[in-house]
Image 1 (cartoon, helix red, strand yellow):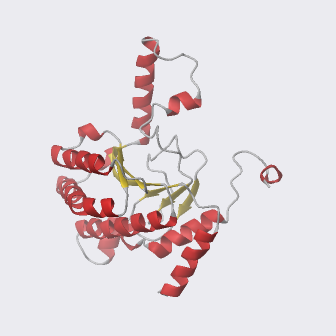
Image 2: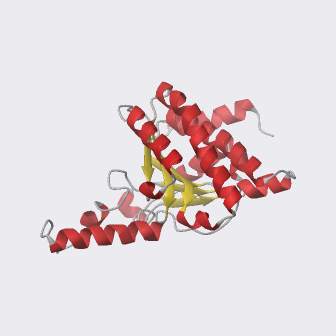
Image 3: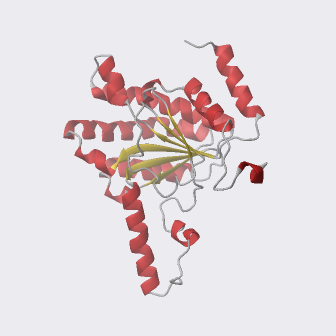
Length: 253
């Protein structure tokens, strides 16, 4: 276990640095393994994972991080057992209903990326209510990737861009900037730091375009156990790195 003093010391060290990431994205993995290790049903891991979401959202807001993107439910997740998918959708609805006042209290603005219109009616409606209610908030931007796939996002962008080119709404000389404006994340900066919990070393079809120069940290901690101390460790690791964006060290010092 770690002491409160040590945790607070890490937080103060982060805040004293000018190198605080603007955007953190997290692949929240390990809910099922956390539950299995405790001889609990998988849904218990998802429920405890909500407590991690609450704490990490709170901490990111206090640290002055502008964007927090959470990989909440992928398109591929629909292939899981129906009973688990149904439980996840119900948990999503309940969480939005119960936490919306907390988001308002903490000045958090809610966003969603993915094929949102293909979600079941109840979670889709609750999500839209949350987005509308928090749209004037000016603090942390909490971005939920729901019914999301990085490849699908790129494919959707290509289709929209093709239509605009055919209608002569845009020039056919496409740049990276032009393409980025067709992504779900067009108003969101690329993530500075990507954290994956539970030790898996893969991207899982998450923010494939946007992660080009993100710093990636993989932690063995399962998502339900990922709390403030683990977040601070990841940010301190990020702050110790030199981001060169293709240049050499001498060019950025």
